[in-house]
Length: 59
Image 1 (cartoon, rainbow, N blue to C red):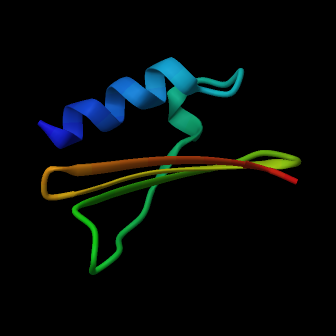
Image 2: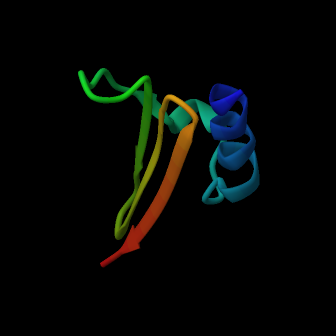
């Protein structure tokens, strides 16, 4: 269920881009990790077990 929530968050908070610019990365401590980088903004969507995290950073 966490995987679907990550996809829902990507759809809701996408930064004027299509979801195909969100790169899936592997991390040993996470079940799912997507990263999106633009000029002055970074986004991270992550899931581990039942936990989901979304972070958007400008600067």
